[in-house]
Image (cartoon, rainbow, N blue to C red; front, side):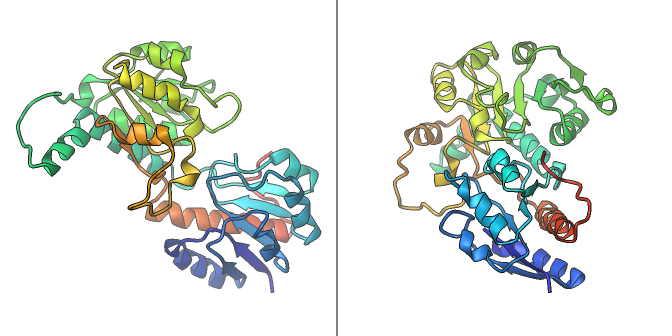
Length: 332
């Protein structure tokens, strides 16, 4: 009987895993351990594996050949991002790498809209005052979304969905993306350069993959191009924004605030209970202390539909590869 091992499994994923296992008559075992040098041996005896994690698999590329020697043909992540995998090393070992590029565009897009609404209504500031029983009506005054321009960098599946949501709420939506999608032209206007978007947008919403062209995309120069009363929303990948530059821009009031569902160095912080424990990341602590910054632990994807899709799509791809069948989501 075919056997698949899934790493880093949470309790909320298990019902979908069990349902898929029964429907396909495939044994799917789970572990809460991440896939690393210390845990790669757990895959021995299995026909395929699925991973999900925030940090890199390993600094040693031998881990990929270890999988191949076990008879495993693939390496599947049940996430959209594949930056934790050394793709060239995996290919050299003969492994097919797959991901889940569109588990639920609505999940992350709705998160961006939610965070934008919190920022423009100053809810983070108001709620902190309320926690101290300060209910006095005073600034900063809120703004209405229908009066604002939302600039989306990366208008693909997720960014395009966000554009439709923002447009439906009355915002003027512009986008910067090398690929122009005709089906989005009824809800957004494409601009030619990143700086053009940064100059015009009241909210800059990031929806890009992490790669060599997007790493550090929002740096000090980019932040200086933004309006002083504009907000930054990042629900893509942490390294897309240069954290030092963002802190400086916020401290110097170059921008009005930020909502971060992802941040550089998050692997040591997110998905961990750190109550009562000091966090030795000075940049994180600086951002966390700012009243105009919202930090959430990379939960944009975390909806019932997205979790189910991530499980099912990833397992479908593993089974197809095991059975020497075509696979839709191979990462080249």
